[in-house]
Image (cartoon, rainbow, N blue to C red; front, side):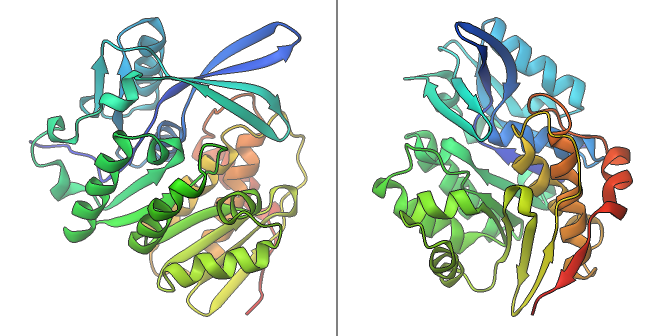
Amino acid sequence: MSGLPAFIAAGEALTDMIQTAPDVWSSRIGGAGFNVARAMARLGVPSAFAGAVSTDVLGDRLCEGARLAGLDLRFIQRRAQAPLLAMVHETSPPDYFFIGDDSADLHFCPQALPDGWEREVRYAHFGGISLARPPLAGRLVEMAIGLKARGAAISYDPNYRKLMDQGYDATLETMAGLADVVKVSDEDLEGLFRTKDTAAAFARLRALNPRASVLLTRGAEGAEYHCGDRAWRAAAPAITVVDTIGAGDACVSALLFSLMRQPDAEGGQHLRMAVAAGAAACMQAGATPPPLAQVIALLPAVGVAAVS
């Protein structure tokens, strides 16, 4: 089969229900894996979201969003199950709870993906709540292991949420150990390692896989990129923030875009691209992936310095 994507993001696609006033909610398409796939496609990388969505109107909206983003629709599976909802009752910073017992996402079947897709994938991204929701979590871990064995690079963003308790520790260790690239925020580190000492938590994360490069985001304080024994720090550009939903997904997507397109570039260059994309995503409502032109326009406003 021809025309298979070089990049896939696997996991959940869902509907964000965002509280805009007391008893007033608006819906937007989202989901960590889905957001990353759409962001990569918006940057010009042939991409797919590998996951399952419902057959109702909410699933239709997700599929339409995938089509508009230019994703390969052969990787989205439809299941006659309830939709997965993220109830976003706070946006700055985002605070969520999820509704989706036995929802469509849990019925994703990797064996039903297009024939030969594994041979074409250069990068595969995993993370979000999909890795904390059995039985889907086990299928995705097996998928990541198989792709790694075939030579694909693995990207991992745990994207901490409250359901990632001690039972998630084994998944964290496995996925961090597999990953070529790990993206975490300072809030992720506090939640995943159950400590306010983010420096100690970061050291524990790096110890799980010293070979992986790590993008550490710090919200308005910018981000750091660690690769081997080198590190770079970037300040966030001055922008008007509309909301931060999807900013981390845009950030890691731009990092992966830079790594795929310019693998020999210095780490500071990759970091500048990531921070510019995260800022661009904050300038619009919802998890709306920024176009490449907007990201490039912000690059001069991102200052980067080597720190080691």
